[in-house]
Image (cartoon, rainbow, N blue to C red; front, side, top):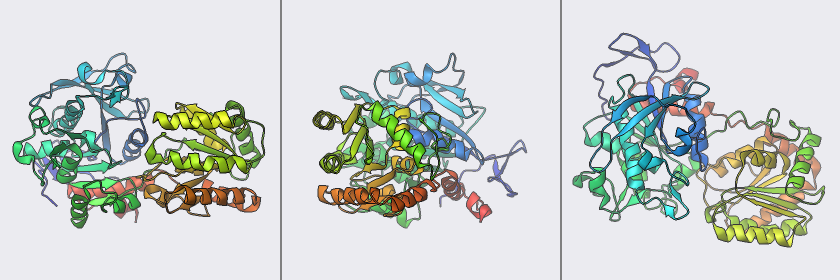
Length: 508
């Protein structure tokens, strides 16, 4: 472990709670964690990363002084009448300076906002629009990474980070910027999906202020391109990903996306770990206000009431047969072609299928055509609404989730909490969260044949009510809260900070 620059910072005796430090003022303070992320569910999300960024900092702040850093997208800025500016961040090469704002969520979580209308206040998603990725994403997320490094370096005179917790390629240049500036602030980089690496042409080096000497195999170079993610993997103190199985998978050539060698090196150094994501307490059928009827395990009449509401919402026929659901991005990774292959079997066996999501036009069109052929048995809504998704988890009997790869996945956790049994490919976080024949169904080979066989097992189970209800009870009893992850992250933080106290050791 590299030594840590502790100028003005002394390690103190731990007397319970989180690791404590005594600063020059003599005040005992919890370690300060800056959680940098390109999206956060409070304001904008495109998938699981946004959900995690909305939940994990809240779980951690019981033990740490946590602040979040996000770009000032239009959706963020418009949430507030006024955003106080706490610092002016300097530029680097072609990265422009910008203001750093600080806001507070309703429950008191403090969030730094990068204020740059030119970079962030655009139509579309955080990453692009109908024409594709924004052409200047290197500058947009170079600015985000540099901001994290600047905050760690004391850009805000009232608060600086003892450790950076970075997320995905959009923040992964931060530890590199710190290293190039000679600052030794520890960092943890979490990979939510290795397939997205932030690759840019070599010409981006100059405008991002990347030293020419760093453009090599032991640095930021990846097959002739600049890779944000590789920079983070190389320079971060610790690397995590979002499930134990995915951590093992990405060290193989098949799933390593060309980075498996570097990841095996980090693992050999003891600096790669898999920490399973969690879900927040709102995913509870006993309290969810969006359901037709709230229910709990063994209240199958309440679950049927939600199924009836979902059928009405999608215009399906009244049925006592099994109701299958897809709540997903409609892309190849998610195995939508496999679900389409299984749909005819579901309908032929008296089942029904409801789908919500959006993605590749070929899958959207194929699902619409499926619904046209089977209007009383298949319902499709292209788009996404969380309230509708919650109702689908509550009303469905089975969730189709045949992802070809899935770093963690959250839908299978939501489904289990609502008594919908997931049918999943045995990969990544799906393998870590679904127990075959106990809380759902798993299959090994991502092919139509093996997936249809798993669907048939689910259909057989639906006809065996005693077994079905036993599996529902087991699924609904699963705990997927953030407490376990918070303990694991605390152990990593303690290691990165160079102190021996963590929640894990104190809770043992």
